[in-house]
Image (cartoon, rainbow, N blue to C red; front, side):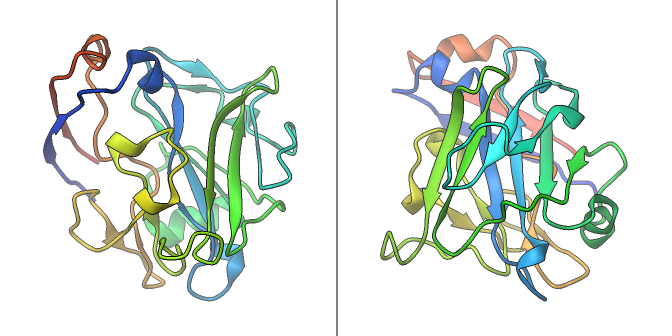
Length: 212
């Protein structure tokens, strides 16, 4: 599927260091047909490629090394990668993703209704964390049956109230897969252009046309 989105975002108040990293950008803890359809997406916001050798994911146990992300290899600037509880090729078919999208799985430290996503680097240091749950955080989104996206301005803030449910044709470029779930795993709707990150601490507008 091809899509093209021109996004202009005001980014005053965000530091360059806050966006020069890898972030959790979308997830779903339970899809249609059971919990084993869940996925998590990570996106590299640069400023350059990131070697995922030794990186790992865990849930609210917060233990580095629990699910190895080394299989992603080098993740390019602007690239989104996915882990899933499904067989990776079954997940690719379910979402109609191209062979270029990197998918790892199945992981067994699966997510629950109220849980955490923790991303660690090769030193075991926390890179990003998202705690969520409509029971722990009343009034927040329950990301079931559709993906939950993290808007650009809320990346890295660990804010469950910032989550936005995927819907066909939304700003995130979401679509409906073969099972009837809405989401956009494998790509993020806006990536700051190289060189523009220096503007983030001073404010500015960033526009990018993305295609998939």
